[in-house]
Image (cartoon, rainbow, N blue to C red; front, side, top):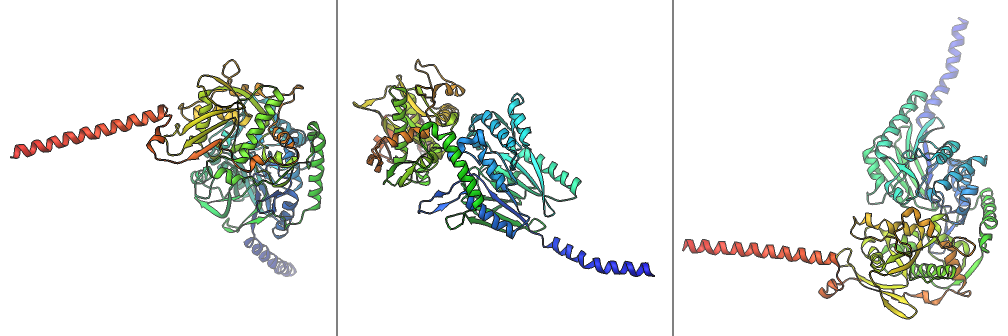
Length: 621
């Protein structure tokens, strides 16, 4: 009887606890905090209204606030955590970005295309540096972008750091499967990655199945499956992330990185929730699910000037800034916050530059700087210089412009892709480059080009690949006709140079631009590194430093010539027959021939029909 009474007493005592545990499980909330495309923006960015957004110290404050509300939240990032500010200059030597993310408590991130800007050797050095730091760093997952078997160094670095196809994390009794996907466009934006991209749909299906089964076998749990997708999407239901969600079952959440999109509302495709929180830490994304993985809430929390800075992270950022000053900028005789010019000109925003085909004063400034700096450094004449929207990362602000401001605006790589190259192309190819600007830009926004040393115009209503109807070389002696077979010395950034070299394949062989040496011999894409412009000491000319030097040469005030455009690029739309065929090339002639043939066939058919009708009438009569 005593044993029975004891068992009853224990049951009475345990029963409420069981009810409490069941109630707690029933009310359990699953929370995911996320960012993507941080691009080394440890410090805030000034917006077009004079406010600020981003900055790791402010982001940390918002993260801590959300952790207080959701203690079991996980924190993930969608890649491109590097390349975008002066802090990236310590990418290989200090691994600043991963160490900062570790200090902020990020659980997992993935690799974006810009993590490969320093080539496999640079990524290898960064991963090894991060691992050797002894500091906490986030896990890295990447499922379908793999080193070649022959690349032993990067494979060892992956193993050294612990890069995985996927990871399983437990938080508050909830299990998360997190894997990374590298998109097609991201791969095209990393031409020197040295990686092999495997079909994302196939890999995602296999990864979801394998990881889910592992969770069930080891933990008897149905996990929340998260894909860190550095692929791309838009707000209209287009893009690689939509295609991935449609094709692969079992993904609960896709963090849509790469295209810098902001999704204020969740997009659901095939049961998969797609979210995006803009670039540079502008927002912290917060996604909540119930215990059955049903979406309960979604919020983008602004990280702006109204958010207080976390003092610990702010101090770390300041220390790293001093490292950049001593270890990198001192080599150029400048410092992070050094003011180089007072600017009273309101240059276009990045969105405005991308919005339409037009002449841009900011694009003019950059291309002029490349031409000036290349001539000064090499002592050789430059016929033309060019840059592209895709490599202009930020505008030049009004007021006091610092070295950091200029670097941020031209920060697409400091390794081989951040250096200026000088090559030769024919006059015909120089015109083809203008045609890329005219014809390809509507299909690829980042392909809009801005030139120094030439002037041209194009009619948007003309035949594709024959939109340019006027092109001349600008010289100190005046306008000079561009000769098709003559070689011209052209300067551009490494990244843009590689993209121009790919024009032939992108246009299915219809137009081509093949970089050459001074003797006219073709230069392969992987040989462009041998044509980097260097000073007398062998120091490569960086894009950011070319712009900085050019601006410094203005004497303290931004040159008023950049207050307005100067007519070097004229974009217009006309259906005037004369303007539609002026300076026509083979594409327009082919179109005209096709139109003539079609008209002739229709006319002949009508003549035959009319004759038959007349013959029938005669036979009836």
